[in-house]
Length: 164
Length: 156
Image 1 (tube, rainbow over the protein chains, first blue to last red):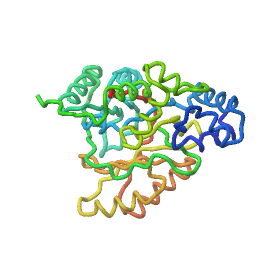
Image 2 (tube, rainbow over the protein chains, first blue to last red):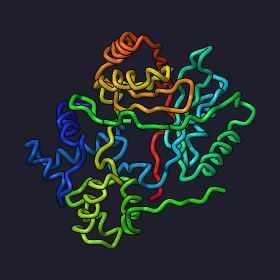
Image 3 (spheres, each protein chain N blue to C red):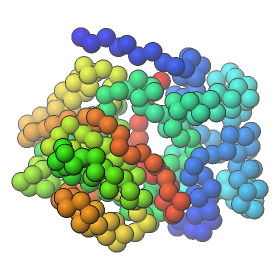
């Protein structure tokens, strides 16, 4: 089933989070004037179809001690990138792994993998592990660390919830 | 070797709760009770601890995480090389766009990286043009061409 109007209502009502009450879906039901069974069924359906990636907690990396958050960027051959990206994405410490476009001559990197560690050594080891997976296909890489959060809002009042 | 000097502001029960809630959350009548059962806690303890972790900012969000593109929205990652003397001014300009969800300074020649989230692809492209024209700087648009993995459990 497609993303429909009920889904949109549910999304808007939950984009800031789920109610912290014993029966959160019942509360949504009252708030939206929809049967609780429908709410739960639509949430399950959205989860199955991938509209909802998951329901759960998003921790603040820094508060869990993960102060080294690196965006590692790699130059790999386009012909191999899908196979390599799948392998890198399977590494347990990689949170996001994407193919993104190069902008030659300014930007050579096409594979992005976010890594997180509590120490610089930990991240260095993770980068070495990615380099091992890529082997000779690694034609160069860098790790960009965030030096400052300039803005972090997450969600808007419009159609888009905080999404990744 | 650098020592791990991290001292958590939460206790070991909170850590278990954070770890479990990163795995997912049940869709049933009393989901917090179900979580409580798994941890050997009372439902009330789960709710109280979760509220405190959110209030304290250890957890930044709790609820469904939506996939923007599957809802018809558009997302991209973009970067700008901002001359150091203009950094503050450009930060203000870029952040003023409501479409800019996150913005990070990074240690690279491309020193500003931001995520745009819009309702449509057209709005996304328009916003990129407006940012370029307001800042007078080139915006490198790096939309995802393929997604290999998204999701992570950070052990608390």
